Amino acid sequence: MDARKLIDPELLGVVDLIPYDVITRDNLAEVRASIAAMGAGVEAPKFNVSRHHRVITIDGNDIALQISVPDSPGDHQAGLIWLHGGGYIMGDADDDFAPAIAEACGCTVFSVDYRVAPEHPFPAGCDDGYNALNWVSANASEFGLNPGRLAIGGVSAGAGLAAGVCLMSRDRGGVQPAFQLLLYPMLDNLHATASGQIENHPVWNRQTSFNAWEMYLDGNPGSEASPYAAPSRAKDLSGLPTTYITVGTQDLFRDENIEYAQRLMVADVATQLEVFPGVFHAAENFVPQAKISQRMRRSYLDALSAALLALNSQGVK
Image (cartoon, rainbow, N blue to C red; front, side, top):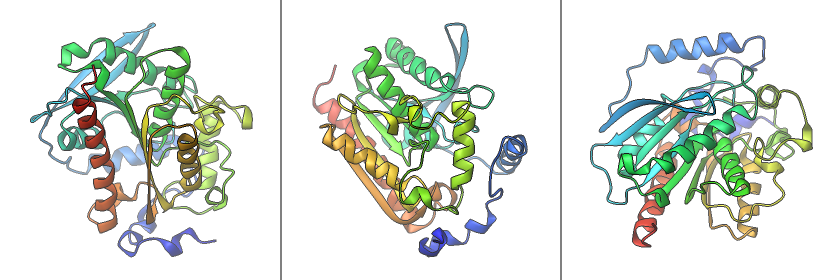
């Protein structure tokens, strides 16, 4: 099946401009350099936020945070721990999602520069996310935040990492976020679904994903992978925070995301699932002006805003 035949027409034009059909260990450095070069030539959007850099040290490991504080903060004293995308093998904390969310939702966003594979395979990145969550909670008063009004979220691999951190925190009795915002999360190292069998999804195809999983997991443990690394492997999803999941119909992760949302609902976790037709992986970021992109962005920003306001109205302490 050709995944491109069902892509929304407004999104289709960018597909052939996206380089690198398959990312491997051998070309990863080149891909990273190419993405950095493309980003260097693009003027960063302006947001009504102030951004601060902070380095925290936990268990001898330095974790860099990019902190986005809205110029007009909401009265809910809420914070979001944000985990960037990049397939567990690329990316950094200095993305546009964090300040955009801070501005739109009136919350302070802590974007975590977690360690990536293959240099730092699992559990390094997950540990960084977990430790950042606990640090923000312990230091909430410094930022004028209520530790009971913390959310965690991410995009793609960052969303998978957020889901893994929630599982880890639940099992360890650590800080449990009040909400998790999962934007087309990378959850399943097996891709044993119908959408996971399609080879040629744009942006993030099946072979690239398997290669990234192998780098992140430092091998191929299959169904024995840790659920903190691949949350689809988790047998028990009870006791997790209220969840929002979104994905496009032309995304490799579509069915694993739908299945995860269904399992959360069965486990009595309040869950909102939004599936957008004709949308490929991260399309709303590549083609932000498209109508379907704007609908998708409004959906997840509205969901986060509503969750934070609900915590305020419920008097969460």
